[in-house]
Length: 293
Image (cartoon, rainbow, N blue to C red; front, side, top):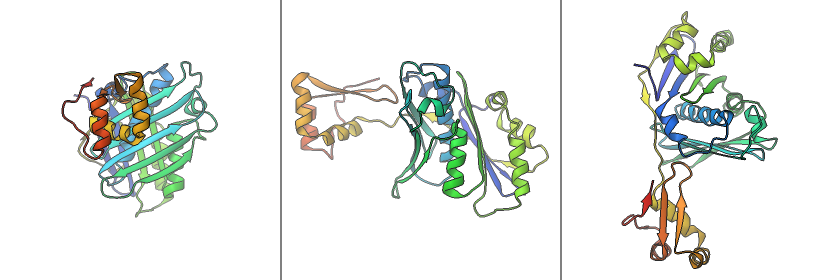
């Protein structure tokens, strides 16, 4: 059986280099189900972003969520991918009706930037920002790691209609060793093709790329699509808008309807619900929730 919807970590035993491999299938299909993907190029960018955020979330120890946002003034206006520490993913894309750019830089435009945020349950949020000055997401993230962590890092990201996949290698922070070892491993990894990464299982791929190296491969970690939206979270966002704005909306309609941009869930709040939110903003009622998927 093919390895799908899982992350595999691996380690070059003799060279102080770690790596990760990920391939998404069902989770990729579910994540894009509620997104408007105007062409195959935009579809691929969302898939690459989801594969990338899974890989990046596995590089640190945290309990919470890692959010990668790409923003710009081009035809692709927003791209968001999120992974929790236990590999629950979701993503969204916003673009013009016609996207003519061939690569990510062209789609996002000259003012594009990538924002990487780690929201941890037991620590203050961390945020890193880098400009979208390279053509591909893999190249942008390589620059991010080189500048922010001073660690040699490389990524390969591919996505098609059915699968999204990624490969990641990085020198270990505490074990900077011979640069020739890193350069050889990077050179070997650079021979990987989109077809290989999208179709070969982890062990097959690593054997093809690094059959002369001693590589330890760890057990798979499942990845699945799961949106963490809830009536309580949406209610908190509405209450933050304030009484005057909410009452102005309700003067024009019977209720307020909010759609989750990630999963398409619909949340409806009538006048009684809104009054409850405003009167009790910290204890939003989860009972009697008219929520539709």
